[in-house]
Image (cartoon, rainbow, N blue to C red; front, top):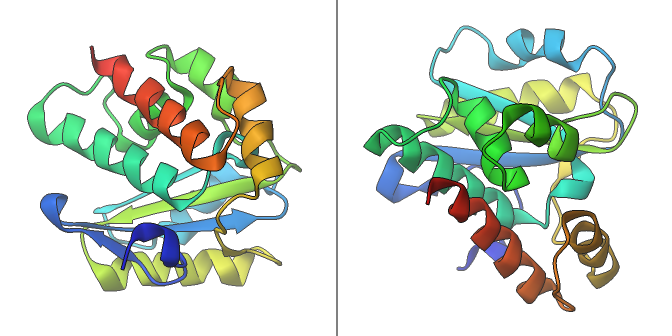
Length: 180
């Protein structure tokens, strides 16, 4: 079963890296989302959560790629920043400048967002996902983007693609290039 046929309510394992990933579409990012992170993580130190602007994400394959790339950077020592959450934002935005990454893809209170949950264990990932669902009304599995939504991401990121797969390919490629 390929990633595009999965919903993100159930964590997906990236076997090569030993992590589980969930992603949730948030209808409105709470203004105090940064303070809520601790309650969403619980006491587990091996959970990382990044909340990003929904307009920066082109569906589940895009999320899985950015997590794979950011975790790999830490595993192999070529990460640009000290925290996995910040590294994921760099890969998503396709820039190695943190402030620019925040401008391009950072969560904005009151706007639609995506919560990306990464954990060493399946249960930890599922529990954090459940805490977010319980705290944010209307949060749900991250759907695959429609062509129109993908085009909005493409326009915002300067992509030349005209179909969802091409746009996703260009965004993934741009994220990988920050390590060159």
